Length: 121
Image 1 (cartoon, rainbow, N blue to C red):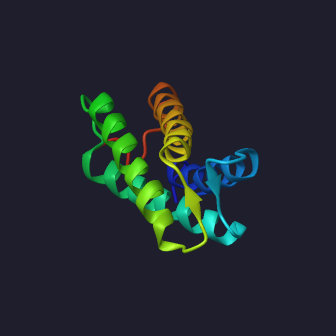
Image 2 (image 1 turned 60 degrees about the vertical axis):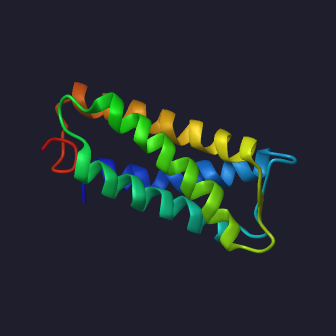
């Protein structure tokens, strides 16, 4: 496994769980397992999208589409759980944090020549 994929699969669920814990009214999952499932699904979708589209010259467009995909996964994926409540503001806050993580992760990979098979086609 590559550094990029490992970090996505660790940080995405952590971000969703922390947003659930620290949000009073915008994000509520009944259990940590629900937040973990959403976080892992976000990581899977972002990794697949990155594998398909992330190459030199597509940095910003990939980041924008990562934002849109993450927003859809968090907002609509949370509707899978009957007791979960994620408002639009809550979904946006999770999405902004995950997109910032992706942005800094991609910058770090490019700067340190740690491009992986997923990040350097």
